[in-house]
Length: 451
Ligand SMILES: C[S@@+](CC[C@H](N)C(=O)[O-])C[C@H]1O[C@@H](n2cnc3c(N)ncnc32)[C@H](O)[C@@H]1O
Image (cartoon, rainbow, N blue to C red; front, side, top):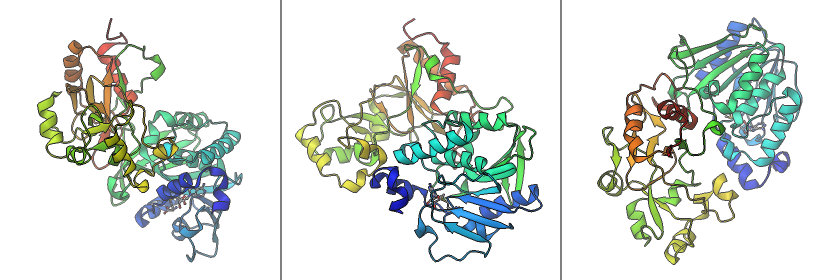
């Protein structure tokens, strides 16, 4: 395998990517994908599967011949396949296939931060040459495989892939959606119930692009279980559709703005509970500052994170609530703490890329904290009365004046956003940062906080 991945970059990055790829598709889902193929085609001759794993898609369908590309030989060694199927140990992006009747499969769901640089470069070069589409730097692995699938089937071919549902609205997939629209291919997206994959925190879909359809229609369905699907009026259930994404560069520098919570590289080590802080001899302000990684445990009616709420809901119950400081020279205590961290605890792409694995850029302190995922009508939000940093799935709102905060909190709480964002996973919804920025624009216009 190292022969095949030599140009992707450092081995630590490559093995991280490959580990993230190791998800097997449940048989019921492989069957469901083939069920869609059967409904759309009487027969298929040539089938390709990019990232074929153990070749499970080869085992359950009817076809003339099947070729599965798999980078990791270990995934299929010793497996038997039907006589008309073969797996080849090659990178999916190495051959220009353009004559398949069907591309089927479940490509890797690896986040853009975890893609080896050489992998991304190669895949984008191939796709740009073959399709003219420049894949966004923020795209996750499945987007590259999705484009590859479309490029690899004939002019009347079919692509049936298991990919995250969010492709229907994510800004990073805009070029891909535009490419499909420009060609008037017909699109069917079947949103799956959450339980299909354990350990993958995203709502999946079976997405079909039918080049033979050629009517430019896009239809959305929700999995009702037992092979039944309910049509949706839009990618969400609401006729008004998804909240639009504010274009970042259109937000004036001093206007209210939501900023994503810090991804420090590893929360396990770089954020601490109060107990962990005390045991490591780390001092508040000198070594750590307050942070919030989740608002899940905060009662919905709390409007301010003040010292008392911080104590009651974070420090006392032992939740992560301190972020190490990286904007000073570390004290001997902090150095001692960082030096004692076992290397395998910070084997993340973000940490491995840094000169000093722990030194992230210290984020600013937001005025308001908002959870990006939510289960009820709207995300939880609070005034940030203790100067906490926003981390992970908690976004921060900046450039709002103190007297604007009540209006912002009331505005957010008066909305039901469940049908205006795409479902995330396990009954949760997720609002993206630039959707929050649209809400801020609707609330305050584009006037700066100091106007
Ligand atoms: C999500 S798994 C799916 C495996 C299998 N198709 C299934 O459905 O169970 C994705 C597979 O893609 C393989 N893969 C990742 N990058 C690849 C590449 N560039 N070329 C070929 N295979 C790749 C991974 O090793 C992994 O086995």
